[in-house]
Structure formats: C-alpha cells, structure tokens
Image 1: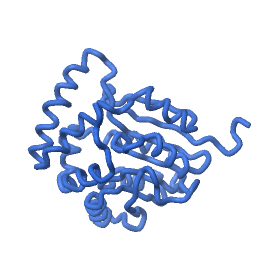
Image 2: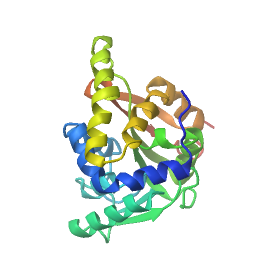
Image 3: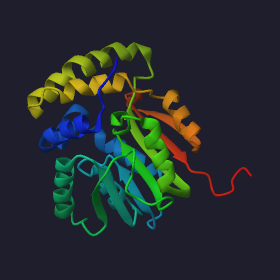
Length: 242
C-alpha cells in the first residue's frame, strides 16, 4: 500500500491533533509509552555530560526524558517540523522548569539543522516511519553523531508471537483508529497510523537499513511482546576497522 508521507501532509496532520496528542499516546498505549521512552533513554548509557538530539520530537516527551533521567543529558535539542506540536512542547518545558536545558527547533529529519558530528546521542521515537525517505533520515542521524555516539529509535512492529498477532492487528486496525478519531476529532490521522506501520520495514529489515548506513552494534529489541521495537546502534569511533 502506498502511503502519502509528504512533509506538508504529515506536519499538517500532527499540527491538527497536537492538543490531544499526549492524552492519546497514553490512552492508546495503556501507559506503556512512558516505559518505552525510559528504555530508549537507558540504552544510551548517558553520563550527564552529553548533548542529545531528539528527532521528530513532537511535544518533547523524549527530549524531557533525556534531560530528567538519572545522569541525564546536559543539553537536549529537539527537532520537529510540526509547529503546533513544538508549541505544546515549549509550554511543557516551561512548566517542568526545563527550558534552560532543552531547546526545541523547527526542522526536517531529512535535513537536520545541526552541524556534522556535533551530538553525543540521538533519539527518535515513533517518527522514523513518518519520514518520506527513512534512509535519508538515517544518514542524517549518522551525520549528526560524533564518532562513538549512540542511537536509540523506537518504532511500532508486530508481536513476536504469531498467535497474538491477529488480536493485536484487530485492535490496531479497527479499535485504535475509532478511539483516536473520537478523542482527536481528526478523521485522517488515526487511519494513517495503521497504514504507516503496515508500510514500514520493522525488525531485522530496519536493522539492515541502519547497518547499511554505517552504524555498528545494531540491535532490534522487541518490547511489550514486539508491538514496539527499540533499535540501538553506535557510530564507530574514528578509524575503527582500519
């Protein structure tokens, strides 16, 4: 199935649901979204000195998690192209007293507004499947990272146990869109969600894209029976393998 992921469509869709986005994330994941974010941040093994880049930051939940974690990043930059989502994120940062450590910037995952080799860690949560050209975005993540820097990506997948898949797919394709439409008052956004997941190369297929980009130590860990995958990787140290 061909899914329209043009930047204008995707940014407009997320702007339209920005006001209910956080609520829907919690409701539709039964609160597991917080656990997934903690696992992603923990995989980075932060020491408290890093500069963290959070791509497709949305309303800045992962960016905040990166700053608030034990030995959290010293500085966090969140990038997203949906202005209304960023506006909600700015309010949350102010309310949590994190405006001095977390900066939100409008930008595109396929052309990140950061210098090459300028960040120690990169995260992207439930955003890579929305990028028109994921391979280009992965190359941008690689470019932004310093040698030795770590990457953590969260994205939807399919349950690892085949017996569970039919029930999950029924919920994901029929129940979840109805709840999303009812709460967000937006028809297209939560029809798009299962379509975008169904068209994304999850698990080992996406891990191969990261490896082809140049990342090392690539792992695809299923979380919550595999409905979400945590992809972790590292940019090799300068001169590694020579």
